[in-house]
Length: 298
Image 1 (tube, rainbow, N blue to C red):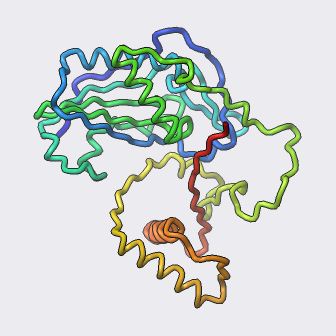
Image 2: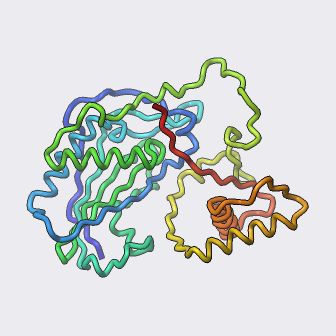
Image 3: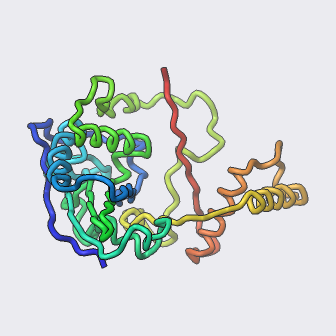
């Protein structure tokens, strides 16, 4: 069992902007629970001053990524916004009696969760830190860094940028101007009054998310922790699922496909249908699957 030895609240090393921080419409649907990520380091480095270096570098990187040192809150219009109040981030230092080999391939399960900082969701959203990190030393001398970051502020790309920048500061390097984050989300604010759509959105990306039948809001659902699972699929299994999806479409009179389903579409539909069944929803319960694509505009 992993034992937490000490806990630190790490504050930005310099004063940062304070006050309300506007979150865009794209940020609103994201669960404000924390997404776990883990980094594993083999036992071949000097760890004597590692904890102190991580504390100092985290304090420095929070100056540039100061929203992560704030806290979320609800506005009177039931929107999420960020309170930049320099409450800081959590850094835990823990020890495990196990070796790295005993964790195998670190497949998501109940054992590996002890390597991540645990968030107390019984507290109000206004009391919860947005970024938590846990350094765990293993008996073999290895180390893991488990992170928990709220999806309301970061996506996968921005999380990687944050970790890479933190790593540079931990190594004693400095950040270049082009490596600093752009934090102003008001560039995504819609005009007032909103402009008319330029084309017909046949999909439902701009429709309100469906509610659980009998519920008047989705706040309870957004409080639920993110589930993580590993689904290994061989090339033969992927091909079988894809072929089955296209065969069913070919014989169905309800669906008219203009092209065969891709592997991605077939696997996504299979996972979503299986997940919907596992949740035992009412047969009339509307559900929506969403996926996010990153784009870069030069």
